[in-house]
Image (cartoon, rainbow, N blue to C red):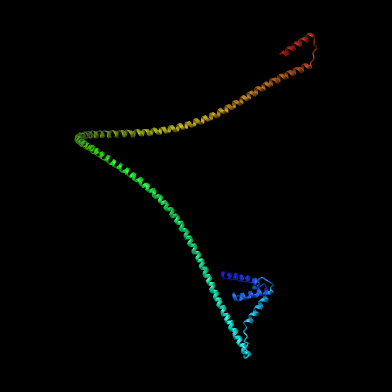
Length: 365
């Protein structure tokens, strides 16, 4: 595809180069036909010519193409112009030469095509080689970049190692000084340890002597303790006999106590039964007492209610008696007044004064 595009671009470049040389449209189309047919091995057509040249009308490339094919046929025809040859022989010789020319032209075209293919193949190989070279160049560039980066890293690592080596040298010198001090201190500790060991051996000898004396004293004490143990064994035997006698007496007393305890337990059981009966009776009595108390409380409440009602009734009765007494007095007074009004009596001065006095005394009452 790249080869076709390259040939197309080259053809267009050649056509552009022909434009100044052939300003006439027909001449330009004729040269383009020859260029396509002979140089590029393409069969020219009217549409293709117009697409490439873009000049004149659509009839101009068709006319130029017809003229090109006519001229090509005329040039390819071989005419044998010899006066002594017959006409048929002339025609046969001409056709033979024309066929030879066509064969030569076809062979040349095939050779040109093979050369073009070889050239295109060489171009492709050159391009492939160029691509490979570019890839190799990129690979070498990447490798060189990686090597440079690795070299920079190695340089940094080397610098770090040198710095660490210097630090280790200083640390080694410091450790050597500390080691010398430690050796001196160890020597001093050894000297002190030797002196302490000598003192310890002397003290150990004293302890051993004292231990021997203690062992002798312990042996004497052991013998004394053996004799004392024999005496203790004899006393223990006597105590064992006494203990056996006391155990027998205690067993007899315990049997007697057990019998008494059984009797006491039986009596306690009877008492418990009696207490249970008494508790049941007491519970019943308490329940009866509670019922009686409840009834008494109820009666007291009823008595209080009845007393209150009786007090209310007494109060109402007293009020009614008072009202009745007032009503009787009022009735008597009204009756007396009505009687006096119904029977008029002549009044003398003395009687009038007496009535007046009587009325005054009545009003005082």
